[in-house]
Amino acid sequence: MKLIFTIIFVFISCMIYAQQPCGTFEYESYLDAKFKGYSNALDLTRQQSANAMHQLNKAVNDSIYQIPVVFHVVWRDEVQNIDDSLIISQLLTLNESFNHRHKDTGKVRSIFKPVTGDARIEFYLANKDPMGKSCTGINRVKTTRYDFGESTNLFADAVKYTTDKGVDAWDPEKYLNIWVCKFTYNGTLAVSAYAYPPVNAKFWNATYYKSLDLQGVVVNYQFVGKQNPNDVTPTSIRERTLVHEVGHYLGLRHIWADKSNCTGEDDGFKDTPLSRSATTSFNITKNTCNEGTGDKVDMIENYMDYTPYPYTIMFTQMQIQQMRYNLLNLRSKAYRIKTDLPPPPVYTKISVAPNPIQGNLKIIFDKVGAYSMNVVDIIGQPVAEEQFSIGDTFEYNNPLHVASGIYYLSILKDNEVVLKQKILIQ
Ligand SMILES: [Zn+2]
Image 1: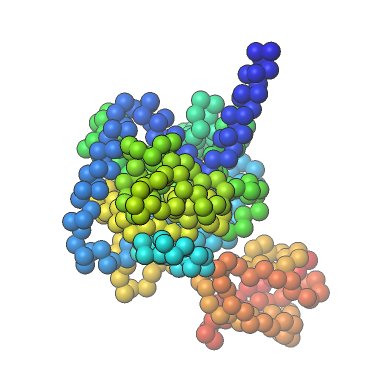
Image 2: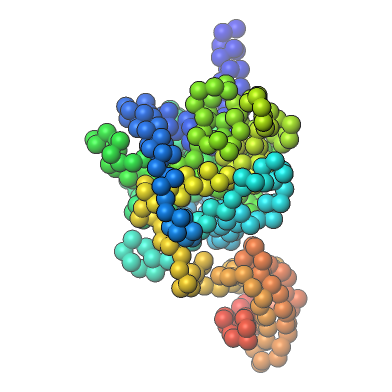
């Protein structure tokens, strides 16, 4: 009987874990156990940041900050080696979300509209690696390790080390490192992703905390990009998983402050109503804490809640101030100020993949915009011509109705040829 109870208990535990989109809070507890004083140091840092953020100069506050990102795709099976187009669409989602311009922003309830804001933080795929060489910002590493999860905790820090069959961070002071891999807790998908919040180095135990190699975000490969075909979790935050995690990376806490009561510790922001639980289904009447006069319902549309896709849609102005302060002070080398100079390319080339082509012609673009395409056969006779716009997927994916054989494809933008390539239709 006791054995059966244990088995059921373990099963239920796993089921609960399976509902959890993010493990950042547990990660903090884990680090606190591993490195004594970590949580206290983090609380002090949060407090100090909150006190100091109002001193920011208004002019500095108006700048747009741009953070270079490297995606380390660490894969063993082909399914984990996610497509470039998913990563590019993820970048787009990060930029739409942090700059409050995605299609769902209008759905913020009227009581919360006055406190929404535009963080003016942008993300771009790093175009120079740590050695200064040109790169795409996508670092693919084949591994022999099947699963980066550990049996004693919910995390996957091994993926951050080449010696553990993962890959070392690119200078974490200068890049936002995002590791994409498979990680489970004893075979069960436990958390979608977790992040490493910034810590002011002076509060760290010098023996451990000066090491920066754990900084960044780890995400299961199912939760990167728009319409990731591997994401079959109904309660998932989908491509906004990484919006939530980058919120942690810039120092935000969950809006319910990882507690189950209405008193004590809060997330630190007066413009997020008190809450005492994560939101796991869409419920606009959810109101877990009565705040007396002016009481508001829980802000389930906040990115720092767990509300399933597509209902998390906003950061508040105080959250934004905090992130910007943290970026300037605690991640001071990890951004550049946007100027009138052209932004770095989102992606370095237009590519046809795969080629030879079976089925649809698939072209990945480096920029949104209007394009025209023509295809000629080997004697130069036009066989196809089309005009199309690249929207938020950065991808053209349509059938080409021609016989098998060799053809020449040209892509034009503003009457200029941007790609000319031989293609083989099978
Ligand atoms: Zn979280």
